[in-house]
Amino acid sequence: MKIAVIGGTGLIGSRVVEILNARGHEAVPHSTSTGVDLLSGRGLPEALAGADVVVNLTKPRTFDDASPAFFRKTMDNLLAGAEAAGVGHAVILSIVGAELVPGSIYYRAKVLQEDLLKAGPVPYSIVRSTQFFEFIGTVLSWTSDEHTVRLPATLMQPIAADEVARAVADVSGGAPLRGTLDIAGPEVLALDELGRITLTARGDHRTVVTDDSAGMYAAASGHALVAKDGAVIAGPTYREWLAR
Image (cartoon, rainbow, N blue to C red; front, side, top):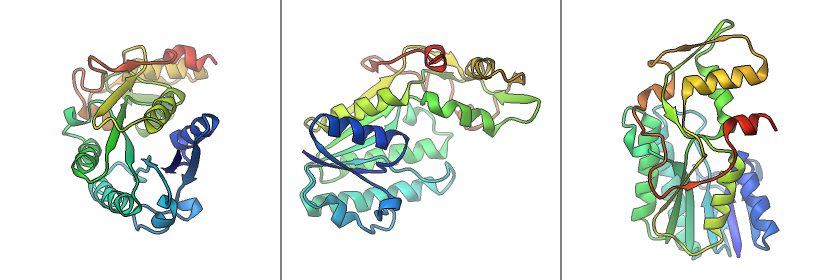
């Protein structure tokens, strides 16, 4: 199949393209760097021409109040373009538990993206993932200084980006789910503990202070970001991944 991967040069997208091409598909990466801008629609008709499947992995630059408008506009453009081009399957990557974190505008925006896809004219699949191992370091940087890293004790079940890419590729190469596939790593840990594990592995001697008001993930409570029954559990533990 010919598969257009919008956001195909990023962390997940580049891996998805590599996996799909290795399986014999014609996966083509598209992004603003290749002349395709999903927000404006520039280059989209050309990117979707002849495509059997479109995978949307785009995201806004920030996780702030601009997120809902970004996802509404990009999904409107994607669905209109896919319908016009006769694309038979649209795939997006979303977040496990997004609807359970109404205090986060970014998570509400991801739920909006899902709802637009479900209501749209193109058969669809949604892959929902927990947080990526590769993103933990960035999370720590949001609420840190030279002496401390402040993190909430929010429960997470993080996963390696390679496993997420493999799941997206699996779904993209198959029939539309007309539903959602959840994927998560094998271990549930509190974010403050993930911070301590990360700093120890890096030889970073700063102190992690548990602060349930610190950062974006403070908006999540209980088991909101933990995989539910039926999720695919895949890949190494965080400690195993750090040791590679």
